[in-house]
Length: 288
Image (cartoon, rainbow, N blue to C red; front, top):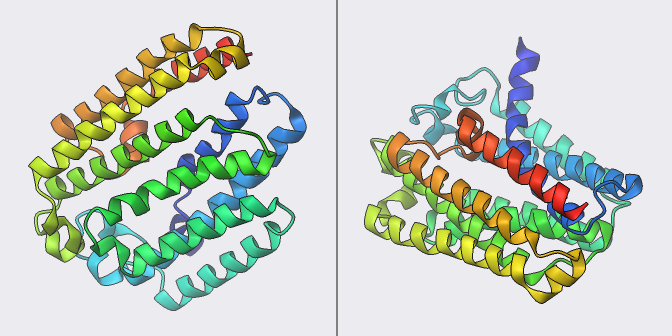
C-alpha cells in the first residue's frame, strides 16, 4: 500500500532512541508521578516527530547515494515508491506540526529540540563529511534527548550521568561507523567520510569511549550525592549490566558485523534485550 510507504519514511522503529528522554524522569524518582510522566510522554512524541522530519530530509538529500547502498536502496524514496516532492511536502508538514505542538512546552526543552533539528540538518548537508565531527553530531542527538527529558520536567541531572550519556553516545556512533566500513564494499559511494577512518583508528576510539561509559557510570553510582539522594549504595551493582551491555554490543559489531543500525542490532539480540530489561527492572526496584 502507498500509505505504508509513507509511514516507513517516519522510521518509527528509530523512535526507540527517544526513550533516552525518560532517563531523567526515572533517576529523579518521579517515574510513577502521572503528571510528570504525561509531560515526558508528550515530549517523547514531539521529539519523535522531529526525528522523523530529519530522517525524511536526510533521505531526500541522500537519495542517489542510498540507491547504491545494499540496504538503504530498499527505502521508500530510494526504491522509487515515494517521490521526492511528496516526501518534501511531508517534511514541511511535520516541521509545522512540531512547531505548533511544542509551543506549550518549557523554553529550555524547545531550545534542546531546535538544537537537535539544526544540528541534524547541518549534518545532512555537510557535517557528516567531516571526520570526528560526524561522530559528535550523531552523539549530540542522544545527549540532547537526555537534556530535553530533564528540561521538560525541570529537574537536576547528575553531571556523572551526563558524562555517561556523552560517552555512550560517542560509543554507539563509532560502532555505527565501524559497521559501515565492514558492510559497505565501496565506501566512497555511500558515505565519503568513511575514507578517513581506519579500523585501527576506529578501534582506539571504541576502546576509549567504552571505558568512559563504564567508568563514568560506576562513579555516578558511588558518588556521595547519588548515595544520599537514593539512600542506598546498591546502585553500584547495576554497573554489571552496563559492562555486559557494552561488551555484548562490541561482540555483535566485531564478530557478527552488526551495529550499522543501532536499534535493529539490539532488537535482534536476545541477550541484549534481556540485559536491558533486567537493568531497568533492577534500577526501578532499587530506586523505588
